[in-house]
Length: 281
Image (cartoon, rainbow, N blue to C red):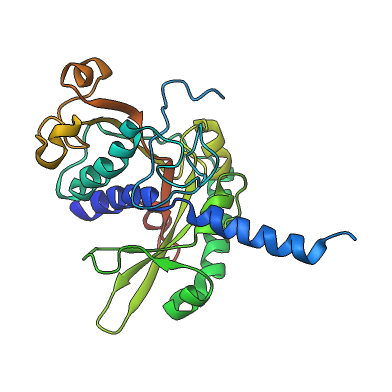
């Protein structure tokens, strides 16, 4: 897998940390507005909930918390430490090759029905986001540029409300994020990203986008270093490039282990000229 593909996947994971609270705030605000206008008269098992990063995270991956609850609110010190450490781990990830910390769904045998469904999804997506080739239109419709000052091969313009809705329903015309390449004069639209909570099964992923066509991915087996080592942790051991892959080894090293840390995600490039490129990760 080339560097471009690795960056696409790993940066998408960073984005998941930033998709917090903003969705809930927006939902709450819209609900409040509606109320004012309408006044009447699966147990995730080992999939521990990974605290969000930055300020807030949407309800796509909150197995135990209310969707989009504010970071730090109701959490103990260990969780708050992990919030900050996870961002540091992810911020370096695109410089390394993929390995055992990445889980991707296996491609199944495609049927004509699978391709028909995939073609319908990409067609609806392409038509719905055509207007966002003018990135100003995306901004006007509530998409926000994630980390605009960080040099990236692809920039995510994220609609936090869409991300919240993706937890409960699927509309091919409503991606969580739009993907852009930066140019000298602005941004060129190249694709979009769909998301789902980590707690869902692969069969549920398959119901949305056939697993014979697209590979969804998860970031796994994160060992956060001890608190006193957070500023100078050994990256050969800790983080999403580290050698520690089990809870036992992480505990022995004094760290905190998270079997799965983000939700499912998949990219789509509907303006490409072949099915393989449209669904290539």
